[in-house]
Image (cartoon, rainbow, N blue to C red; front, side, top):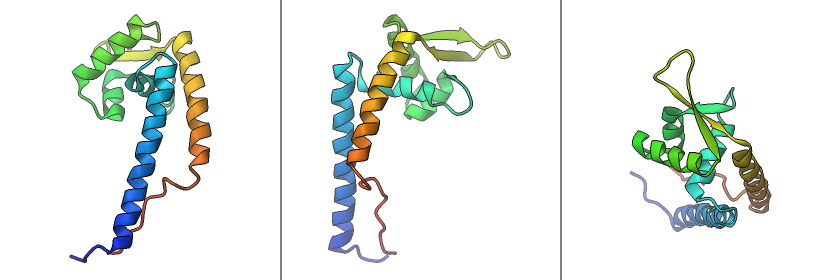
Length: 133
């Protein structure tokens, strides 16, 4: 095992700092829109799911790296807030599709615009640090 150099720790530290700085920005932005950071991520993952405009509970659990039952509760809270709606999949009735409602889409667009602008200010901060082997 190769010893890590001071520069390696500095790169890792800077990388983690930039991640946390962006996360903190995201938390504040979501709260300013009246949603939790997790609700924002749920909306983002629904809209950003590849190839369609909805996602299943299981797919959202994977994207959020969360337990299935926790995502069910999160979707319930978002549904109560008028941000999303559930639909039973017509082909496989065991699957529940989660779709954005217009209010969820509006919040998501505002937040995604802010996040995109913030990412542009970080210019290269999220490049994975190269560590010598």
